[in-house]
Length: 121
Image (cartoon, rainbow, N blue to C red; front, side, top):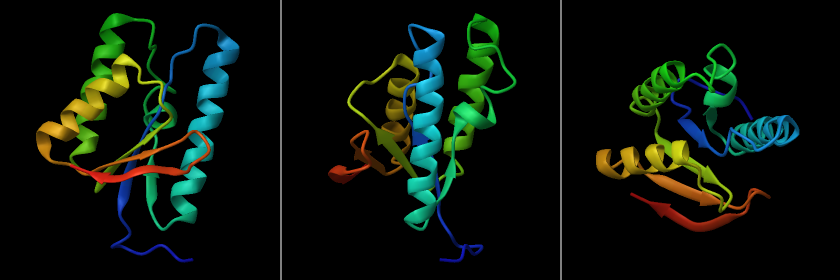
């Protein structure tokens, strides 16, 4: 598969924070796996965990707010939001709500990258 200028960009929506450092590391590895799934299925993934959270401190309320603002702005440049897993964090809920409000299509997947209910939005 080759990517081209018309390849859709999809926003990968999955948990970032974890109760422990190990859980957060696992969430980041999951996000990478979801990104590989997107590429394998003809989409270019945007993964905020890797693109924005890598240089902002999510535990600092001001930096978290700035990161969420950047995330929501980035959603305007994405063709769809792909939500992975059934555990919806507060950040994920904000992204889902934003896409619902802006009529950005949403796809839901299991943590094993299996489609759940098709396209919404």
